[in-house]
Length: 413
Image (cartoon, rainbow, N blue to C red; front, side):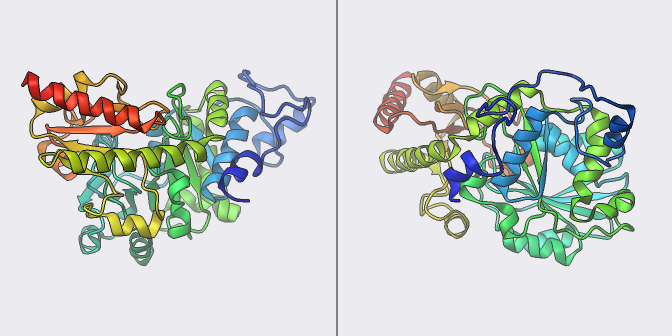
C-alpha cells in the first residue's frame, strides 16, 4: 500500500462486533472478565486482553497499531503528551549515573526535560547537530543513548539520520529520534537506522489542536546489552519486543501517563487525512517561504526547501521534494516581530504546530523562556524570530495577509 491507502486500511479494520468503521471510544477505566483465570493470564502477559485503561484500552490500542504501521515499527505505546512520551522513552533505559548525547537544536520543552533529569543523576551533553566528531567526543562509558529531532524545532536543521545512527551503533547505544515536525509523511527514521521514534501526536497527526498526546514507536532491532542496560535483563525473553515489554510493564504503567480514549479517537480521525494535509501544507510552506525570501531581503527566511538553507541537501536526500510546514523568519528586532504577529489576521498566535490553520509564535519569549542564552542560540532562537506553522488555507490569502502585516508593521515602528 502507498501512504494514504495505508493510513486508511493498513493493520486496521474498525470494530468487528458492530461494523463501526473506527474503533469506538471505550470510555471505561476497567474491563470485566468471565473468570479469575482469564484475568490472571492477562496480568501475567500470557494472554491478550484489557484490564485497566492506565495500561491499555481498545481505542488506544487501535491508535497505537496505526502509529506502528505509519512509522514502520513493531509496536507503539501512546502517552498523555509528547513530553510524557519523551520521558518514558528515555527513562525506560536510563539509570542514575547514565549520560545522554543530544543535538543542541531542540524544542525548548525537551531542553527543560533534560534539565529535570539532572535531579535523578542523568547528565545530558549538547553538541551541534550533524557534528559527528562532537557526538563522538561527548560519548563515554556512561553514554546510554543519542537523541535528535528529524527537523529541529525551531532551528529547522535536518538531521542526517543514517550517519548519526551508524555512529550510535558503533558506540553500542540506540538512536532515539523525535519525528514530530517531519512526520512519517516526509521521512521514517527507522528506515534510516534510528531505533526508537517519538512523535508528539498533538501536532500533525491530530491536525486540529483538539487532543494532547505522544507516541513511542520501537523498531525492534537494537540489541540490548543487559550489562549496559540492566533493566532490560528480565525482558530479553521478549526478543525484539523487549523495550516495549519493559516499558508497558514498568515505567509507563507505574507513572500513569496514559492517553485518554477520547484523544486516541480524535487522533485516529485526524491521521486519516495526514497525507492530504501534509501535501497541501508543504506546498503552501514552500510558496510562502519563497515569497518572504524574495520580497523582503532584510529578513532572514529559514526553510529546508529553500536552496539557501544549510540543510537543504540533507532534506532532499531524506525527504525528497517536500520539506514540512515550518518556516522561521528573523525580522531584525523583537519589536518588528511582535508588530508583524499582532498585524496578522489569519494566523493564530498559538504555541502549537501542525494545525489545519496557520499558527505563529515568538519562541524566544514563550517556548524557550526557561532556556539560557547559550541554549537559545544553539536552538536557533533569537528575539527577532517568528516561527510560522503553515496551514492549509489558500496560499494567495496567506501571502496577502503576510504582506499587509509587514507593511503595517513598517508604518507602526
